[in-house]
Image (cartoon, rainbow, N blue to C red; front, side, top):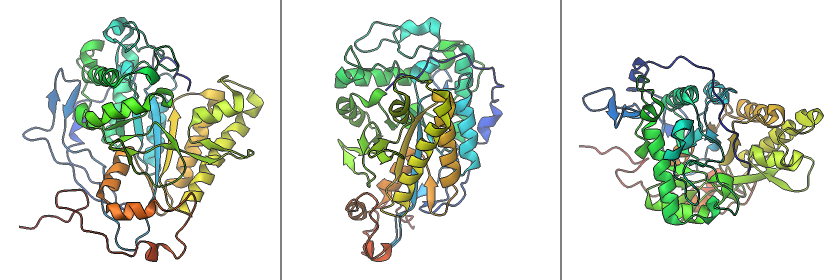
Length: 420
């Protein structure tokens, strides 16, 4: 997988004032099938409680985050779709802010995998000590003051809108020369610790102490990731499990219901039909690009439209196969890049607009998906995993999931409230 391009200096945006955080203290969400309304609780004694140098803060429960509910006996599962972004940051292309608006307009939330070095200024690059590499090395570069300010603003607004902030780690090292595929469990833990540290101290490192904080505790917010180039997954998953992560999305799989691997939900991207080809393609913009123009990120302009349509139509075929079939969650990965004239960004937007407002469809973040999975009866999930790609229950959903699920233990998502 090609490394995400070096962050360019973004056009300065007006920073959200501290008063914007007050809006996240109490929130409700519109009703969604398979989710329930919840209200954010204010932080004890204060609307905003700063953490560390004030780069992050506790502001109460995340708004616009519906709580999960268990499937009822014979109930058809919602069709979940997850759109996720590797190396999320706001540069001069303004794709982060653009897709925030696209998601909001189409009743969707997404997962943004932030690269920690995007919160570290170039002049402080030696603070990053990557495993297997010399200090200050990064294959995707670092950022500048405007880029950090703009990225922080998008992260802040994204979270307040109910989106998830994950991690894409730091230097994006791929291949055999010290790449992530060779990293030990302890090296992965060190990389994760550094990614967290850059997010938790961006105001000090970038000299932006007057900016409002990110409205979340990153140690609690961070529950999942996707590894660079999908490499090094085995040791990463061991490290992630030890650190309390809940999911990984660094693999490739078929369109079937997920299970757990190494104690984490395995939310791998999937293979979907590839129009015009006899083989299927992974649900990621980079993989479509490589199949169309190789490693040349700007190929034949005359084919840009065709290439974007192929990705859009492939994702839609995969969606329809699941929606009419086994209802397995559709997992999609992307980058904020203008490869081949931005045709893949167009494709993703058109998929969001066509599927996320449909009945029984829930375009959610990975956090929301794992919350829902954790709330289900394990026997129901095991039954769902018996369905093959595109396979709908032979006698309908009502009979397929007719057995009464076991009640959820008290205190877990989906459990009935404790009565006095």
